[in-house]
Amino acid sequence: MEFYMYEDGFGFSGFQMMFSIIFFLIVAIIIVSIVRGLMQWNKNNHSPRLSVEANVVSKRIHVSHDTHMHNDHAMHSSTTFYYVTFQVESGDRMEFHVSGTEYGMLAEGDYGKLTFQGTRYLGFERQ
Image 1 (cartoon, rainbow, N blue to C red):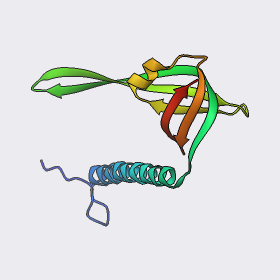
Image 2 (cartoon, helix red, strand yellow):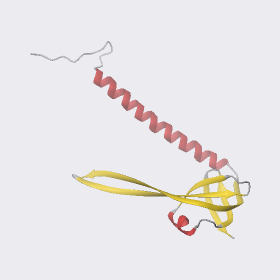
Image 3 (cartoon, rainbow, N blue to C red):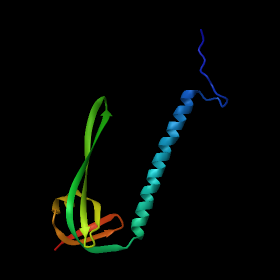
Image 4 (cartoon, helix red, strand yellow):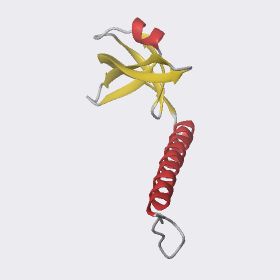
């Protein structure tokens, strides 16, 4: 008894076609993410550095958990991202990704001079 895989007119089986579509979809998503990151980086570089009076209105963290297999052992890791929201005199709010050290030095209610460039946080000088 012989088994034959169905092939369409282009010589691809259904599995090969589905694998190719998924592969190219993943590659396209990666390329789009890289291009968006480069565009944001370029936009930030061309934005003026601004220093404005602002209040720290909130702080939050986001913890990302990952599990990797290494030599048949599960390796667990986590990454913590720190965010601070500032409110400027006009009432507008801006959230920035900050380092853990910077996050620890800021407290809700702090008032001072916020320095940023586009979406890039550069610093906060408490007054």
